[in-house]
Image 1: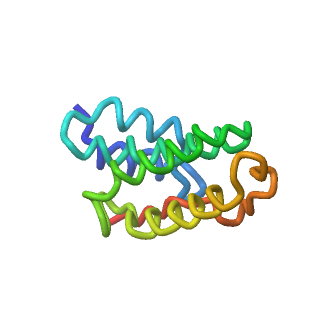
Image 2: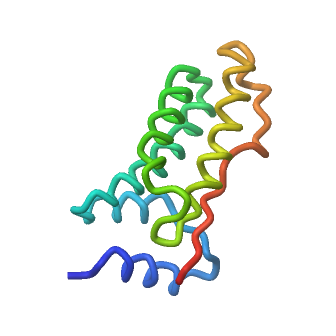
Length: 122
């Protein structure tokens, strides 16, 4: 059986960059049996929030940003190499901007506020 840590290292070793894809995170979330699976679920939900944002779904965006943050909070400041604290700060800034804009203003969202998941391979 492959451990989650081994799966991350294997995926990153095969890639030219240090970016972790959503399908890879979904795989990790599905194979992990321990509570740390909530880390992956939180990251995925933050990502899904921006899918909702692109579709101008205000409720879906706000809900997923909040729910993702709830899943991530117990893992701060860092877990499995993921800079959870930075992700929470970035997600909160994005949420603040979305709420400021409201449902009618989502087209004006500053996409530079979209969080980047920082993974430090140890």
